[in-house]
Image (cartoon, rainbow, N blue to C red; front, side, top):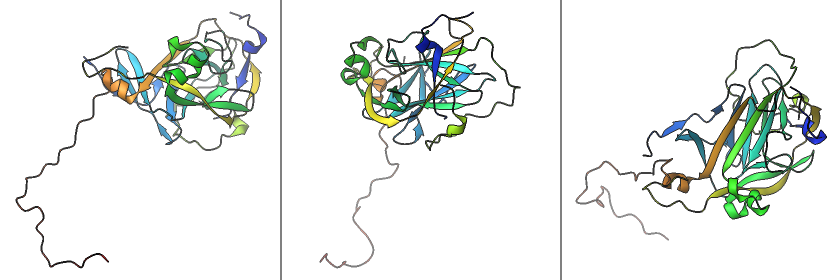
Length: 270
């Protein structure tokens, strides 16, 4: 079906390439039928692990840390990805809904959504911060802080490539993107009381060039939605999502003379 959207929504941005019961540490990828999503700790160049809790995926963030949302289109056709953070569209800044602008990726392409889109050339970096300092709260929309969503849409009349063998998720690389192949644009547990919730702030400006392209959706409804919730590690432990760390005990017998040693009196320090 054809969508009737404002020009800004039809002309999608082009990103540069890029009890606590059944607790289980998941692979670091949220797998979809069409696209995969994972979160990147940009300060450590690592992938943030996911935890499954009551049919939801969770990730632990560190206050002040920068992060990115890495998308991979593993289908044979172009896909539109409408991305929201804390209930806010990361491209337009509107309260997120399905009929808004997003990033269009070519088959097998990857793109790191590293911040709030400020222009075709710049973003404001995503960074974990306390709820009151989050971009959503500062713009009067605190109710949905703590959740990341990716709504994936197929194209109405796509050009479908022959299906190649599906490669593994590309290894993480925060190097410069290849511009020549750029994509087209609380539960509580007995473990303790959670502290201040975590949100996503409006960080420093960074260069991130994009273009524009047209994309006609096959349907007004997304073909899949991938959702990841997040909070601080302290809060996830308190809610029973991550098991508490246990002290490391040395397996040794006590010694009656722990200071004894063979040898003679050493020289004093000068």
